[in-house]
Image (cartoon, rainbow, N blue to C red):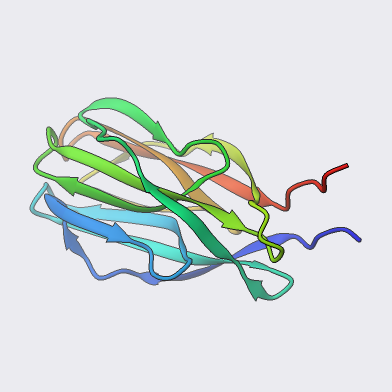
Length: 167
């Protein structure tokens, strides 16, 4: 019997956090599906989370890990390791500060990690007035930012699939 398609039920936006001292992690077993930011490092950053579902059952995340520190100013693209999705982000300081991404596996109903298939990078947006939400039934797996709040930000999304059964 084939496994059902995986869907993502988007939730509400988080309460805003000051970008220069932020540490956001999706509640429960939710994943990141969007982010928006207004202003400079003193401005507010908001996250949209979502619940991953299979056959009407909410799936769980597992093995949450924080990335090594990432310097964003130079435009380094951060992409979660293979088979993992973004579940949070922390940042301290201005554009020269340190960013860490929280990533996790999503487990199907039997406890097997889902397959994560990357899509394409989004169009760039000016960071100081940016808002991005992944297309329907997709999640965030990467982000790139160049420069200060007048620089650009783009996102990488992915679609989740049941893992192929072992043969």
